[in-house]
Image 1: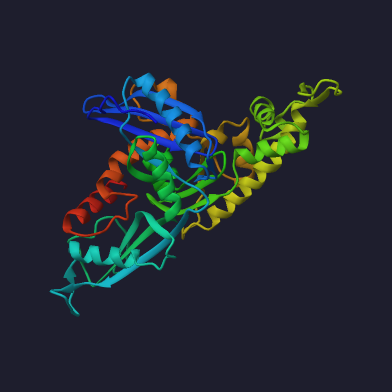
Image 2: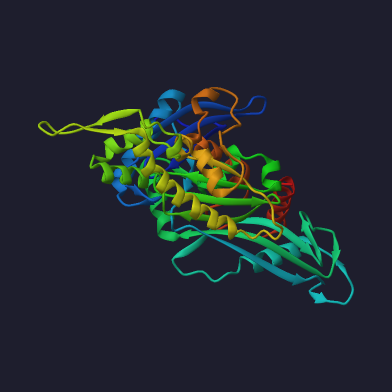
Length: 422
């Protein structure tokens, strides 16, 4: 158990990305003059987590403590609280809407009236009033647009004259027990949870430009156990989904086909695997590990890459299916941004462009003003984004704790944030 002997200074922000294969911790300091300054980064192997869900609390706690301790040593700063990323195939995204008639003093009229904060509140409450199983909860409420009478794409309807107001939102829901177990592991590691944040929202904060979200972009976060897909259009999240495939599936395929250990298979994937077999060498050969007395086995980079390509092609076909499910009325050409540890696979952009039919790039996290080279990798995208998204949004709306739309103050915050997205 970590002993917190030094208190966390004011302005210190911590993002903790807990994945199936790795745990990444970022410590940064928010400065009025210098922006976000990176103080420490720690990454370690993950145990006790499978496909984003806790399967062994003791192992998960030890893994969290190890990664956090590395970041603490680099930063010279103890971690007391953090924004935590959450994902897993228990996550579901829902588009919903709520519409009301604009009234004055609680009475409807044939005459038009100005939209008030109370009207916006009622529309949002109706949009959130979906029937969920008792074992699920709303993690995030993400505004897409308001519709005032027949006028769409309104960012702030307050004060407008209308008869009807409609709020369209995207809800991210998750299993209650999965969230509680994740929170328990972090707290047993001696860290208070500021908020649980859906990981692709954090990755998007660190890698996507506002223009991309406006025109249309797909974020594909490839982790070890799962792949997260989020479709942005007109500055809002139009679809989110979790695919139960990740980098570990490629490792398992290599281990099975070559009859080697999982550790050896992971090394082979990193050193020789290519997402496009045609771009791998047939002449580059290497010897597989073998027991004493066994006949040495030789295999080419091309043959290994055939197994890699087959699994990656399946994954991108599932990604394409999720893109087609997005609630986007007009046909547009999406760009695709790949992030997460799986984005480091060689020639992955070439295969993605071939299967998805769009422009593909690797999402490198931005927003840091020091030690940028330390964290300039898609591996750190979620952890860095947790700080950015968590500080700007989660602290405002208590995301991850069943936020309620109550009071003019909360509605005003929501309107200002939504307006800033455009």
